[in-house]
Length: 364
Image (cartoon, rainbow, N blue to C red):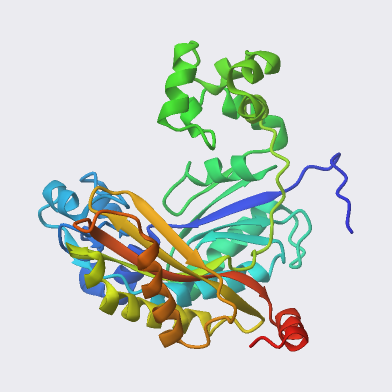
């Protein structure tokens, strides 16, 4: 076990690809360059996966309903997402990261934390490492990335937003307090609209004002979260960069153009089971024991039902059959309708240990 000596601050990078999905589409189709692009299916049920910077000028943002995006920008060009291509580019970027450090914590296809306190490349500083990574991404993928450099994860993530797109922002240890003081409290991780309103009621709008409140007072009002707020206001974050964690669930889901009744979901469950199973076949070291059915009702309530059968599913057809049977455990009125269905595999265990238990107890 390696024990970190806290006297030497970490050097953390947060690298964030710029408008990633949209930028890949503009790179691969020159006719889209310089134009407002939304990666999404057109339609009332679709949401924007990514928006080009040209589209953002009109207020188009990711996770926005596609129909609203089109109202904001009538000339918006819709491009259906192609996650196979995005994943391939993401792998290229991860390979670039790996030249510099093994401590890589992916957050999604387009962003990651890197601990470069000690690097494989031997570059003299975290800033030089960030510049080298950004240059390699530009040269090898023809895309741009923004980066933040800081003594910890949450500061690095804030910093990466300060020079977007295609920029680099560095927060040195001696600059942390001055950097944080004027920031609005909603820049702190975990401070959403509700917490922002609660802090505003106490006269707290900036991180500097939050820092002026004692830890005991914040804990009395907000419990353990109060202690976390106290630490964040002082730039304290001891969470290490954690290399990629094992998959917790492999799933596929779909939102329908028209809401469907429970008995109408079977063909969709079979189709999604095929997609989930295809993803599961890439998991060579572990096996999944649990089948998960996810449903979203027409009034946006999310339901999940799961089952760990005596014998794990051995094929997409078995997965679909179990998922279909889980509908019997949905205790909703018969006339209920559903806008989304998902099928997944969870409960992953090491393949060798699972096989040893199966041999011992005679399970398959």
